[in-house]
Image (tube, rainbow, N blue to C red; front, side, top):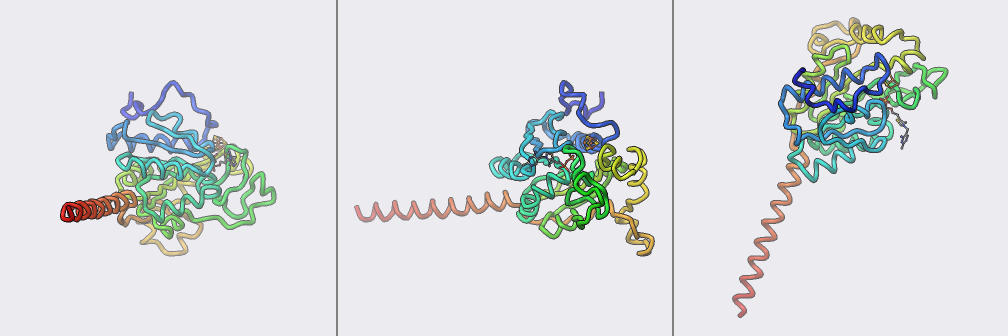
Length: 286
Ligand SMILES: Cc1ncc(C[n+]2csc(CCOP(=O)(O)OP(=O)(O)O)c2C)c(N)n1
Ligand code: SF4
């Protein structure tokens, strides 16, 4: 039995995902990263919203919270704020995180709260049968965009960086080893970390857009993703139609719960001094 299997609730298997779905690959990468860091199971909390991707924590043997659609980061913020010693991880989908959950996402980034967020981006709402999400590329077909999506999509990594996240990375279900490495680094960052895991939904995105099988979709990731380190040496025309993977941003900064605790300690000292002063006054007036 592999070392990482100890983190699974085997009695909850088999999982609900369709054959060829990329969500299992991403879940595997997270669990292997946790195993590498040998994190204590009783200190890890995994939180999700609603969606096929958000079912992942149900298979994991940590304290897990399967919450409401879009609210994973709100629940996770509550957990981290009340118990800052815990390692809090969010597993979310592109719809869950960037549509209904978009506001929570930018504010968690702004606070730089120490939460590692794995966004399983399959560019579609899988669970509810393929409506377009804020990350569906323009022109792609979804059940709510039968003639092609006419909206522009978010660049999640740039959004996270602009909002204040201190670690931002991207990999795909094809680049599973890189994904594991990046999640490990994200878990080590003391601050808001985002790993965008580009995954395939062959059932809805793939089928409706005639992208072929899950293997064809993985091959497309292989051909279209360029590591940011390699991209630096490439001519712009070679990068047309490609997307970047690897570590996109890594600039640690002060973290919300640590700052908050410091503020509380400062106020406590002031309060203690004030109470000491009051006691002295009372004694002098006796
Ligand atoms: C408040 C609310 N609105 C809408 C839904 C319906 N809903 C459930 S899952 C989902 C989309 C999930 O998409 P995504 O987060 O991209 O995950 P995926 O299923 O693709 O992994 C939606 C819209 C809901 N459960 N609750
Ligand atoms: S509908 Fe798509 S995202 Fe959901 S389990 Fe199936 S392949 Fe995965």
